[in-house]
Length: 331
Image (cartoon, rainbow, N blue to C red; front, side, top):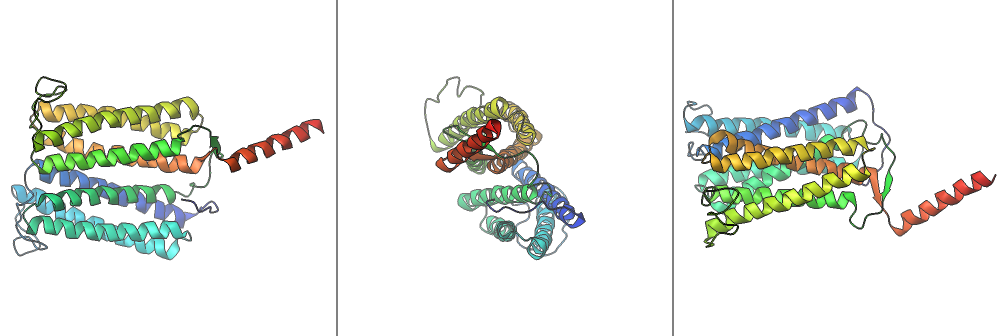
């Protein structure tokens, strides 16, 4: 957010922030339930949409429990998003925050439409992956809204100059983009039914590189290569924060959480293969992937807010500050 605002205090500001947190938590639950639908093969357990077997409340048995339960949670998230958007548009003075809220509402409506088309057209790959992509983008918007609606968003540590050739804010943004791409690769793999086409881990058919690359194997192996790239970028980001920004607690704590989530995610990825895609580790892998994305995004937003790149203008500001300090010392 480029806009500068005065510190926002009071019960109204705190209430909006808490409601945004609640909506984001409900969105995370929706992603977990959506993962259950895919993990249990229940995506077409209810063959019609927007109704379920022509009614609102079918018998919640078998795959219907997961699919219709997913629809119910999605309906709740849609209502919460509508309420949050109206609240922010009416009360929030910052244009950028209002725009984010409206964008989130538009995305959840697009997401609902994509979910319906996924059912009506019997799980076409392109729409199913677009459904996953939209879900993660919506979750990112909700997380960003949680960050910027915090009443203490404009308070805390003073902004510091980042003199690195790749500033922390840019590095964290790159890490977030790669994690998002990796999640989409995972969604493509799941909807292609390619999750176990490479049956071993960490090797691939007992080798570092598979001997053949038909489409399912290529997608699966690309997901594994993407995981290595995520590991490198997350480690780089966490190391940068630990080395240069340990005193910035808002960054340091988020970086520690990012590293911890990465370790959990790697373990869940291995368990998913070793268990033959058992429901719990597979679904948890989807959910923790979303959590990893959310924490990386939070770090990127915080870094953008708490640091500034060492541009010509910031260098001039540094010189002016030094001259002022020298003048005071001479006096």
